[in-house]
Image (cartoon, rainbow, N blue to C red; front, side, top):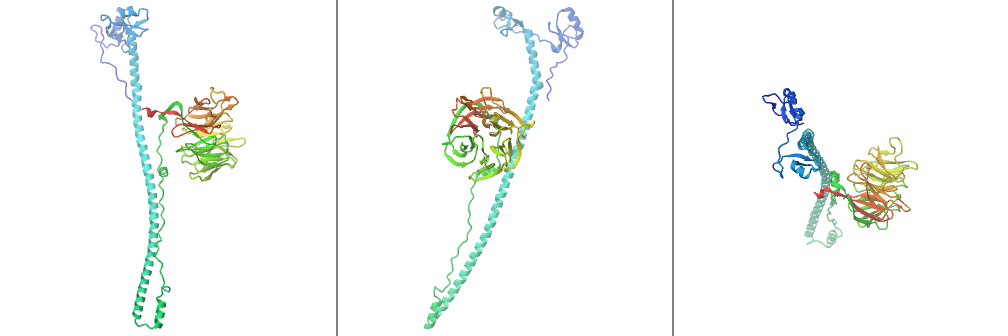
Length: 548
């Protein structure tokens, strides 16, 4: 760490006449340097003078003339106006104001400045240099990590090339075998045909010689021998070529094999005013839960148990009949674009592939599955499930192998009375809405209880359903409380620690009763209501990089 600059001066002599000793002291009254031997004598001769250690001295006020009264020195400080003045200015315009000795103010400010300078040298500059060093180390680390990424991608590309080469070599080997078989067969056919031609040529030549002298009996027999009907007619050679079907290049599938580069974008965004940017009418169906399938597709569940896929103008693309409950987030889309949904009649989680084949993924036994969420972070699947007396969240890997049960807090008390909707925050927290307990429950990725949120005093009642998180770690939750003349339908915005920040929307801004919501890849939130088939899209984050 750098040292604070040495402010000590060279050997300072005493100002007393004929004394050349080191001046350890200073008289603030007459501004003289004084050594230890002359100190007592000076005080005796100048009663009331202030003697201090030299490094604690007050500086003599530098001479500065007044710009209005050039013959006058500026030596007064107006405490009201905070201005330095000469005596004439003070008498003419500031006589009713409190004032101070300018030399005292001057030295007080000098002392503060010196403290600030010393502090800058002691802390700010070393901290800044440490920060420069840290940035350099982080840059080196970034370079190392990116180099690792490049090596990993190159390794994977080489592995893919080896696989491609292996497939090509295998296909070429098959082609060689087929080529040899087909060519050998055709060579055999060619040889047989050539031999037959030789036989025919010899036979016809022999009979041509005999025809000039042949008798009737021999002619009749000869005619029978050369009859086309009696001759062996060879089949024409056929080429037995293999069938080759060229594979389809799928850029997305190849990209999955090579890996994906991502960066934390949270620093690019800040909260802004809420603006409606789009709406989609899901024709003929109400929307109880939404899962976005990018690009440009939506999965929505309705009150009749149907799972419907829509395009961005509300046209129905696919439809699946299920036994879903209408008040749970019973479906989710994986980062690979597959749909997962729960079946409460069969206690099963199903996977729907891109070609719409439906496969059983998990059987939950005696537990009835409800809300489900697929993590974009690690591909894990979170399933809320319950019995008549218990509720829990269970974590599975993407193949459906059970990894974790989340059911009790550290005191052995149940965490959930119901699990209506599930989401995951960018720090790994698992956030659930519990309509029976009237609260949002948040646990760590290890299943340890963090906090719960039971609404804000700005609204009389709180009944949470739809829930999601954004790039900044905010938690967005639907308050779906509606009872007689009480309508608290709204979207609550919480920070990552569960502190209420604001109401993004209220019932006055959106006529439908808020029930489900999700975030798209443009960082807008989509909201649907249980009494409407219209899904609305709102912008509420501002990309700060666009304003640079």
